[in-house]
Image 1 (spheres, rainbow, N blue to C red):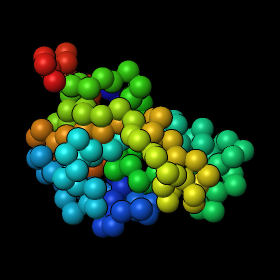
Image 2 (image 1 turned 60 degrees about the vertical axis):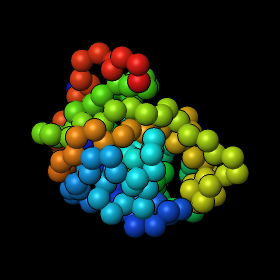
Image 3 (image 1 turned 90 degrees about the vertical axis):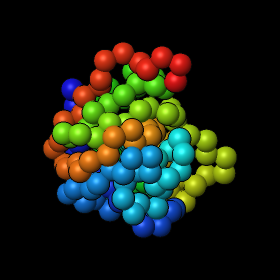
Image 4 (image 1 turned 180 degrees about the horizontal axis):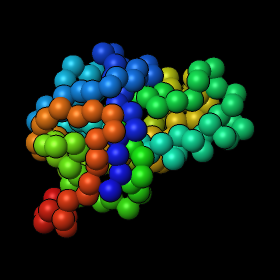
Length: 156
């Protein structure tokens, strides 16, 4: 079991997200009013704080023109204490009291380096990020538990 380290929000794409203390996950949509909501398989993005800490320590990341922090990679939820690398498509996570995400995509394509790559010097979302669809909505807050639910959903 892990927890939400940071919730990150932006109303437009191509910019680092700002940290907020709480948000509402909307079923089949994503974080309410977030620029990336409703993107089919990529409704909500997750990245672990452990990977961000490695980027902070990395010499390449120190050449960034922006501060390396949660939300800089445009992830919606920065996690801590849960190994995202072991999750597979179809796995489900309970976040907070009622929200449920189903993992829909591992990594992402970055055909021509995105704005974040140019600001930070690297974008780890293609390698470390995961994406989910909101199966059950609800309010989430920094510090809320993240728990993998029982086995993978068959056929998904």
